[in-house]
Image (tube, rainbow, N blue to C red; front, top):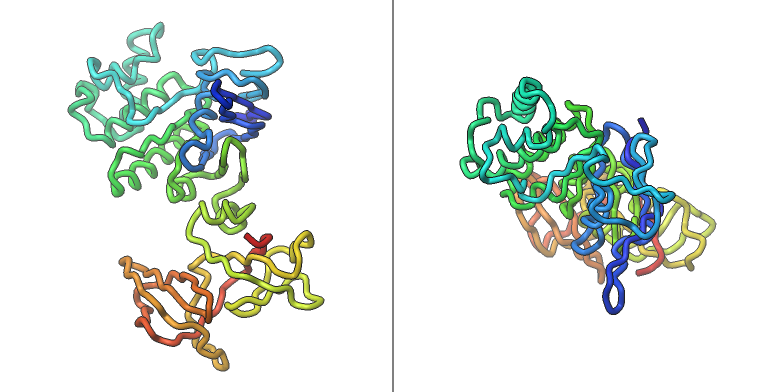
Length: 352
């Protein structure tokens, strides 16, 4: 099994001018892993999901699942034959059916005893044991999403697609439910593709993150890789808070850059296609207070925003302003002169 693979997908919608929703999109969702497709609204995430599910037909490209061709070379397998389950936004349960009947909906044609056993198995799996006789309106939002997941898993699909499944839930419930859903998919051994615009959701749940922008795939990698080594400044800023300051090449040194935060070490060599000036990127949590001897007070605290376990601290470094994130046990006061250092390496991009 090689998972779900899409290559060169193109989907255009009629209009004046036509709207290119997908432009040569590639995606590899490895077998048994959870892949998050992350991007701003309107970037093509849902169109990609509908294309993978078979509800949209691309003008070009191919889709394979476990080596089996679903799209490409004149082949277009209909949705019901793809062995792909779908969990839409807000569950979309059938209100006139109870929980058990909702879950069993995709099991028509199987013996009644087998259907009943499968429903009980899935109720246990999603933590809703004994709730099979309830109607959707008797469930909380989180419970409804669990039923939708169980319904998608019932026929034993090779892949489950989840389209912003937690967007209608409150923050605390969303965090706990996404962890439960990820654990359920892993326990079932099912490949998952999660579409979301929530960076925290994608980075915390997924094994791989695919970042989309304007119908194209910008970067695909592990959560750590895309967060710490973004492909460009747009991706860096989209994935979280970013500190970007001007930097200058240090003479005859391809791995060091001079900035208002000091002389910093680059993850990769100085970009040769740029001039002597670059935009240097790091994350706010990399900027730390230091009490090392000999380090001068190099920044002035402009503002402190307390956020519980940590705080957002705005610093002035001469004419440059940056934001750091420090534990709330180490908070200075506005106006304080502090010495700061940057932990770890940084990235350099063309100015912009």
